[in-house]
Length: 274
Image (tube, rainbow, N blue to C red; front, side):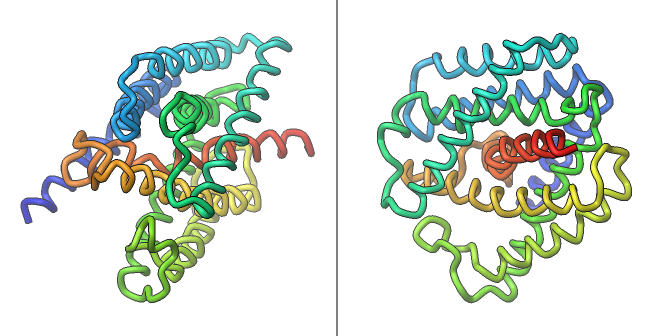
């Protein structure tokens, strides 16, 4: 009962901060920056990275990209640098996904230098901040929908996996995840996308939200597995203790972290074809 109370209180505080930040573009940018710093601290502990360089890199990237989007100052160099960051991020994430399935341990050249902290973590927070600003004006409904989809996926994957799961999804990394749980989370996330498209005032159609729900479910699950592998190598249960009963903030955001660059890439595709 005490553990449930701690989970409820910390979860309420976390959700309240996020929802309140959506009322102001600047408040949202600041909150995601704070979340990014905390997750960088937790990740640095997981990979035993003691330098402050990763925090400096994150701050420079975040301030640079959010400043230009916030002020609506657009130029070719900024647009090109954003594309370059996205390409490098997707490239590194693909390698992390590959290593998750073909290696016993994540390669040391990624785990012990700044490639992962820059293009797996820091750049992902940049894209989390940029997603609601993609259509120029700040659209909180888009990022709220993404977070709700991630929550739906995690909740139903856990519930269905716990009650009906038999086939392990990736036992060597996360013994509790099951194939049944994954497909259950995917199914209900897709269902949830239609409710989100109805209740959120955004520039996205029902089919757009359906594709985003698939991205969130698939890449969100993979993001959870990648973080689980980092924790397994570090021999810890949670990435931190900032959310009593839940663990670290990285534990809460791991699915959004991996999915955000791919969501932003999808938004670029939509803008291109339109």
